[in-house]
Length: 466
Image (cartoon, rainbow, N blue to C red; front, side, top):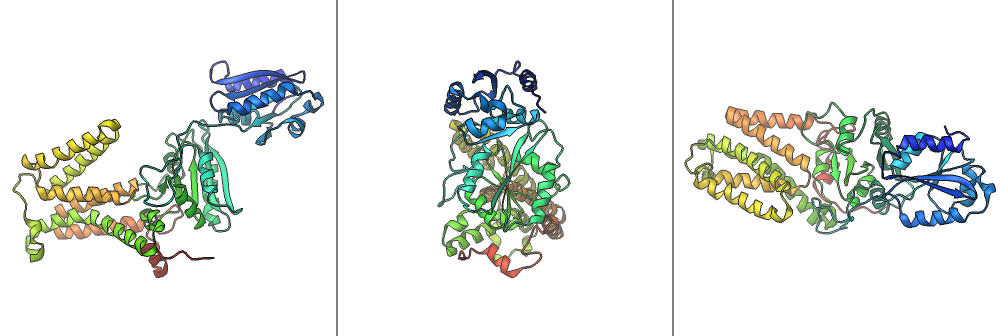
């Protein structure tokens, strides 16, 4: 608590903020109507023009009777909208370190905070990895206030709630839970809210991923994603309007969508920006390509191991060049090489990315075939599954599909037809045993079977009017 001594209050805050050690934490001493005052703020995180106007007002203020308390001063003398009175020094420190200037003066037993913070940010342009052919072209940024405003702009309803919390004893990261109060599952909402409030961690070093792993520590052995991420505010708004929950974390340009099933992960905004028949075609095509990306190379390996079972119309798949490296190892090595190229492209300067991609494609295709490392067919099939992975933008699901291919390829290589069947059973078990954050089936509405809901997931139906 603050005391009635101005000097004691000023020194306490100065010591807590370590103003003498930090060049960017400013302790600005001023005089208001003959009384000493001080403003603490972070240089670079405030709106200079607003601060200049406030300082001008403070210097011209000539009513000392209103300086009897922080509440009186706010009520009669502060020409700014976003202000609050804070009577706890720790709360003042948190505000200042968040970019909110705080003022104390002689006669005050509390501080006044002015929310005039501004954060360096990039423009709200369309996300690079979540583009649409139609629809809005804005995207989330690293500032949580702007992200919540982008959703609020699309939902002009009093039922839309944004609940703010702070996580991390050191980082004190801002976390916002967004939901429609008249549609959300309140049991799930209270569970998530309580979990976040009771988190005992120092910081969210990896933003959203740190938050989710801290909330659900024992549910990550299954590779299939339990959370859907989006960088699109229109998608986040649509999810809220369906009754789901959106979590925003400061310094992260994406939102967490809860709960999430496998069908939710496979959905895209383009499904809804086109007429129902086109949206249905796009969605079904994505489902088929996703399934093909998992089954194509294991089925081809199975055909090569059992040529007598291949129908005559598909005999062409058996025509491969002679090579000393088994097909199984060719497929595995090429998968690893492609991941290596992807990592190399990610860390390559943008001016060289295209050149690296072209060189990599040539080196690991024609040259590798000519050298006798790989066959043309194996290169073709791996190229297809690699491109097919980009039919959906979810990175986590892409890696999950890759692990599924590894399981099927290994099971088929070891156990032939029996191994392929066992691999399919293992994958189905992983999908069926995976649970959403809410504890519901990951395959809903397939398991439990709800035909009407499943139809909505597989096809794009016309929007119903209220």
